[in-house]
Length: 108
Image (tube, rainbow, N blue to C red; front, side):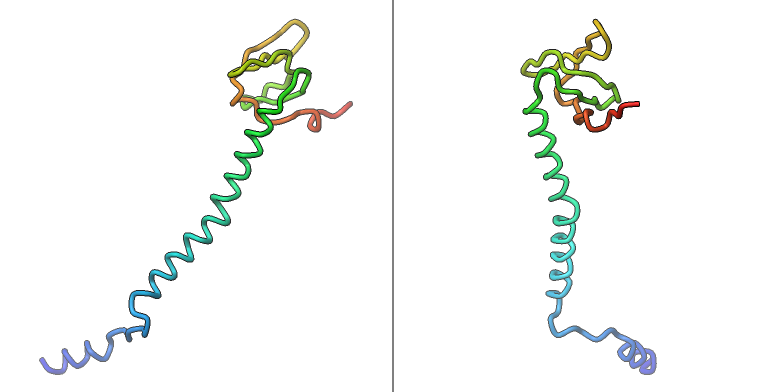
């Protein structure tokens, strides 16, 4: 019986001098890394997209979230009307306008 108790004491993990503080330091470090590599870049992209949507003007060539290419023919507070072909106009919510397509469309 004494042999079992001595064996368990010998195999016990040594305590670090910081105690539980090292665990908290590692946990905080993980959150800091996640913030700088995941959260902050996402916030930056959202800010740029919001700025792009606020700067939309009539005649801009855009792409919607659904992949529809067109030219903005009218802008209202919550939606835009996009002309996808001659005399074909579709109303889209402003949040569905994804990016400017003028740099994507290439002349053939």
